[in-house]
Structure formats: structure tokens, C-alpha cells
Amino acid sequence: MDNLLRINHSSQPVVGRFAPSPTGPLHFGTLLAALGSYLLAKASGGSWLLRIEDLDPPRVVAGAAEDIIRLMEQLGFEWDGVVLYQSQRYERYLQVLEQLRNQGRVFDCCCSRREILASAPHSGEEAPVYPGTCRNGIRRDRVERSVRLRVSNESIVFQDGIFGTQQQNLEAEVGDFILHRADGLFAYQLAVVVDDIDTGVTQVVRGADLLSSTPRQIYLYNCLNAAVPEYFHLPLAIGDNGKKLSKRHGQIGSVTRENGVTMLWRALEFLGQSPPNGLLCLSAGELLRWGVENFHPDLIPKRNSRISFSES
Ligand code: GLU
Image (tube, rainbow, N blue to C red; front, top):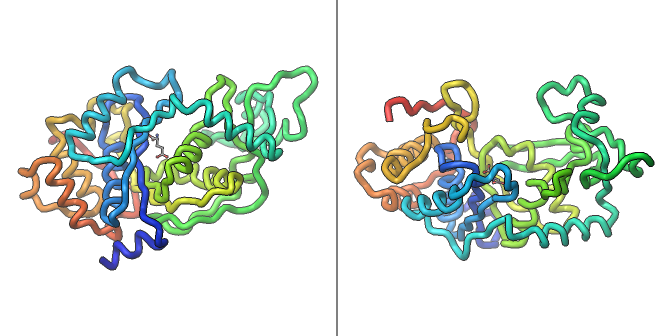
């Protein structure tokens, strides 16, 4: 009980969510985000939403959203309300972009990625910091490509429920960032914040690869005058090649109806919950219920670790 009190420190009921991108079949890394967000929301009596992040049509794989939803159902996950699809929310994102424009917070930008890279030759593999080229208007011979949010020179500090205090200076480390892309699509940073605000999400639980996006999102919450949710970033499962386990690993780590119980069991174990071996004979739904009833958030490891599926 002590743990649960600490998860939900405000008096508001928790609203959590799982927001997969339908770019392929469900894999272990995404299952961790589903399970972690479900346990944190349900163990404190909260609700849990499902949102399909099909914002980027070229990356969406036909049928993947339906497959993920069906599998979530088969594994016993129960979400509240209807499934939200980002592809149906273009008008809403546009409305928020216009609101930010009216507040003077965004500006048109004509820079290509190549030009920004050329201005920051030492940025290595990291996305280069935007040097502010179009902040005060675009050059006369150029056309606008994207829309950026003007950031300020202050540190965004937040408390992550797993990784502790985090801090980032947006101006120095990121620069003014894109909300509306050159290809006409809205950026993930804008869509995720608008969706979470509109659906009343109070608790964001997702993989630690998104830790560095969180300060940008908190900044957007502040610009929109909305309450910032609490954040829990989960440790990442690292594949045999030393990289975050993802759909790029193909079949390795993919979750199916057949291996669902084993994968859920391994996800509980990965999140530090030590499920007894005997639970492997339960159904997925029963195992999930065991997870909620026996959940100890303090046991979630604070570092990424390797996982191998060769024997499963
Ligand atoms: N759609 C993102 C993903 O599948 C998650 C975004 C989020 O949870 O904020 O990695």
C-alpha cells in the first residue's frame, strides 16, 4: 500500500495510457510499455486508455493497428473508452498550432535538415541543435517548409518516477523544435501532448528512449497552460546486438497469441516483479491480474538490460 500511495501523490484519479505506433507487430519492447502503464494505472485504481499513434502514414503498416488491438484483448488488457486514432485528429492539431501562432510562440522555418547539420558540424549522430536561423523571419528568396516552437533559455526540470530528477535546457540542447513538418504532417511532440491533454491523461508511462523528448513536451504543456502529467520511463530491453529491442529485430521478441503468457511473464520479470514459475500455467488474463495485485513499482530496475529470446 505504501508503494501505491507514492505513485498517486495528487488526489486526482490516475488516467494512464498506452500509445503504440502501428509500424509492425507487437514486440517485447512495446509490451513492456503496455504492461508498465497498465500496472501503474490499475494498481492505483485508475483508468487506462489505448491510443493508436498512426500519425505518420508512410511508417504505418496496414493491419498492424488491428493486430495490436486484437492481441491486447487476447492478453487480457482492458482499456477504458474508445480507442483514439491520431490519424483522425489532424483538425485538432491544426487548431492548437493556430492557437500557438496567435500567441506568437511559433514561426515558419525554411531550413532543411542538411542546412542545420552544416551549421552544427560537431553534433555527431544526435539531432543537431537548431541554430535559430528563421526565428526572426525567413530569408527573402526562400519558402517556408516547417513550423517551429520558439523555446526559452531555461532548464526544464522534472521528476521521473523511475529515473529520478531529469533536467534539460531546451535552447542549448535542442533548439526551437518542429511542430508541423515539411511533409505536412504534425510532429509527434505536438500530437502526443494534445492527445494526452484532450483525454485527461495524468500519468505517462513509456520507454526510457523517450526521456529526452519529455522536456519538450513539458514545455508545450506550459505553453498551452495545461497541467503536466507525472512521468515514468521504463528501462529498455536491449537485444543481442546491443541496441534497443524493436520491430527492426524482426521475429525476435515478437509477441503472439501463442507465446503471450510467456512474454507477459518475462515482461513482469523484466520489470522486477519476480513472478513465480508456477504462474506460467495461468491464462494471460490471470497473469495480468496477478501482476496488478502484486505490483511493486519500487522494484522496477533503473537501468536498461539485455534480454535474449533464443530459448523461447
Ligand atoms: N508511439 C510511441 C511508440 O510507440 C510512444 C509514444 C508515447 O508513449 O509517448 O514508441
